[in-house]
Length: 307
Image (cartoon, rainbow, N blue to C red; front, side, top):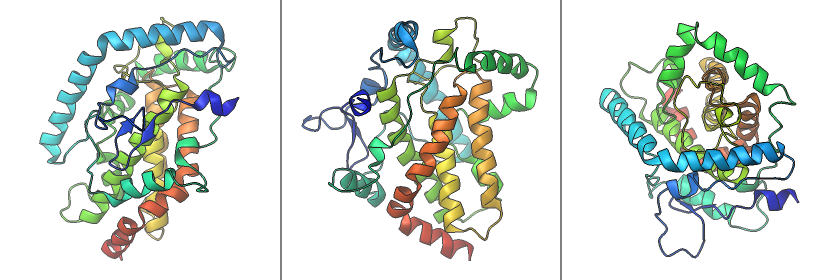
């Protein structure tokens, strides 16, 4: 059954951690434990060849996990030094004082709460060959090699904890103040990052070049699954939050373009299929009512800052 397919045991705790066993005495285990625990699927979503590719991708990811996280950590440290903003590391815990994180985890565990953000009705990922997604990625790879603007964008957007493009659209990138605006951006990015990891482990879709060895990703593959696209989910969630909080500010509508462009850049870079991006966008819409509820106080603070 569909619900059986999604069962992974992962839970978002009240401190924002990801745990595999709700009775685990060590709730602050690093995310890498779960990010690399992909199990091959043989339920028809891609067939036996893709299941084998999933297992191969898992083994490859496990072998390079330490190096990958180390490089990612160094890159984020450089960004943090430039922007003077703390950048969330994959193994960090979300700040435990966040009422949004604790409230979301509490409501998730409460009976009768719909939709449960850990069990949104997402479709299974399609066969990339039969759906034409693999052919599309090969075309995108050729375009990416000649598109310097998209290359620069994709590099700038590598860290999904950095919100420079979002700040630029809102016109506050080089301004002081707007503390509530920046805090809402970071809160939404980090909450949705944790939630996205839960779905990545459950669906366990291998990255495109694990299926087609002829693909050469423009960026390094992150050591976790492809489906859904967390970058897309996060940025569309930010757009949803700001379009609800300050709809009269016309720049908020531009955030949806930034979100779409960010997701597409990850496709051109060879890291995601089109369906990864589409389900990330759908997740943001499905999660929006929940997001508005848990972030309501920060959204009101943003309103006071802009009006």
